View (tube, rainbow, N blue to C red):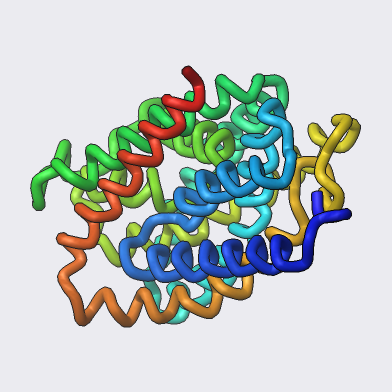
Length: 275
């Protein structure tokens, strides 16, 4: 991936990856969304400039994103746990279903072609954008999460599609929990721990499924790009606290609308690439 390219091009890539980490970290702290929802589309488009084939580009973006989420989730969960914002009881009850979904989603991603994986991301990113842009405040489905087996099915959904999209716990978990009148701070904190349940087995799956794939970029372990990992992770960890601080000083409602627009444009661009 990097052999034989000009130093300026490599420097440009590192700067772009660092900027991706900064953006993802701030958004994670500011809006409670996982950085993967930013990292995956940016990597997907960056990799095309380094002759990474379209048949594996999305897999590398998703696998690398999941790897970055491991360390950022540890940092975020540690911070939230010190503030008592993680519902460990819910995590124990919901964790096995989410883990089952992650295993299924990772397996599905490994056998899926690039078009299907890109399509899944585009459709669900559009759904996330619509939720951010149009869901009225204080809109609820019920006062509590549903009982079994519906609660477990929701957990499987979160794990399955988070693994296929390369995203952490926040993107789906926070809006779902708040639909059932779950306190937002508890939802964000618990989602940070769920990110670990998603990221660790998801990363392992992408490492294994991509291990024997030909024509991987240099510097890859399976579908995980090591340069992307080591550049993005420090930036997300460094700037997530800034996002959390900004959440208390600026209008996050307007920012959610802008981020929804970003996701909408990202989704449309991915649909265009599929066509």
